[in-house]
Amino acid sequence: MTGDIGFVPEVEAQVLGSILLGGDHPGVFAVLEERHFVEPIHREMYRAARVARERYGSTRADIVGRVIDPVVAAQFKAATGTEIGAYIGACTSATVYTAANERQGVRNVVAQWARLTLARELDIHRSAALATDADVSAIVRSVGEVVDEVSADLRRGGRGKTRKSFAEAGREMIEAVREAKLRDGLTGITTGLVDLDRLTGGMQRKDLILLGARPSMGKTSIATVMAASAAAAGCGIGVLSLEMDTRKLMTRVASDLLHRTGIHVPYENLINGRVDESDIALVERAIARAHALPIFIDDQSGLSISDIRFKVESLIADAEAAGFTLDMLIVDHLLKVRPTSRYAGNRVHEIGEITEGLKELAREYDFAALLLTQLNRAVETRDDKRPTLADLRDSGAIEQDADTVMFLYREAYYIAREKPANAEAARIRDEKLTECEHKAELEVAKQRNGQVRTVELWCDMAYSAFRNAARYGQ
Image (tube, rainbow, N blue to C red; front, side, top):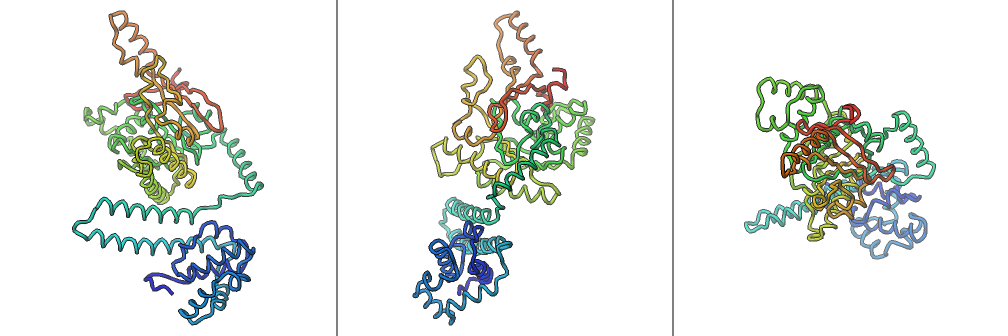
């Protein structure tokens, strides 16, 4: 038997015993691989059980006579003093698992493998790091690869049931229909924007939702409005702000929260300190009233998709500790996510790796992923600057992975930057600007399970505020 410190052979032996009692065990064979067994003879037994199942449709009856190599059997007896057939019998009689609870056993086997693999690899990397001529960057990359591989196996071993019968899927569908009916069509997480919620049913769990716009259109502002509205409805919200630090992000949130109560303190004034003590007191009261909102913000920059996965798992733990679940993740923004070296130089594949990874996270952890992104400069060259799907940077992968694609557009942004040739032109420009200053359009350009349409919004960019247009008389 292996002499690894911290190795508990019974963890593996009891899962093997469950398998060798017979039966199909799809939940075991779909997850466990031979390498997950630390003990070499257990690895060989698992390999033999898999072969027996595939060839003969059974496990215990055929594993010794037709699958286990005689040399292996002899080596086992020499090492342990026990016939392998007797050892198999001991495993089956000692197992505490049945088909009903063996998934826990699978998790235990993978967890033990992960623990010992990490310990072994970190010892190796520790020795390498102590060398005076060590390549620190290479060591860090290597450690990251090991941790990523181990984490992937842990997630795979811990996943819930993904295969359902037609009847089970049908029951879940009917429950969802009833819930949608009770919630007046709101099947997902509310955005606080009524017309958008009616069109989309809210931000749907397991979906990747893309929000695209040119710079300064208000992507971050509308995302914080959605976050605050969803959190006020009891949803746990995670924000990965890769571009803006937490303090600047919070000035937008604070200005919006005050605006909702009729108090106007521009967020730029907060950033630049152009406020008096009474304004600061108002902000303090607004934050105090909202202190219990389940919003968790992380402003670390330069994250890769693997880093985001670790952040998500940490956010989930923080949310659970606070008594919430993570219902929506906001990533601001796509172009700030660091690609891995896997597709170095191929931007389409790099983007695809990121969007596919976020989509997988949303499905795995059952939250809505709202991903912000900037659009191509080609928008600026057209007379009509409303975005289209073709304006997405490296749009092939994004269009494929996103369940919903939305574009934010404010005509006032472009009118304000016009340079009139004369006084009359300036007058016309100012009239147009006054007319559309508080108007915004949120176009749902793609929606897998619904209509595509443009939603009219009211906005005031000085206060990072977006509201339902009808509420403000538009």
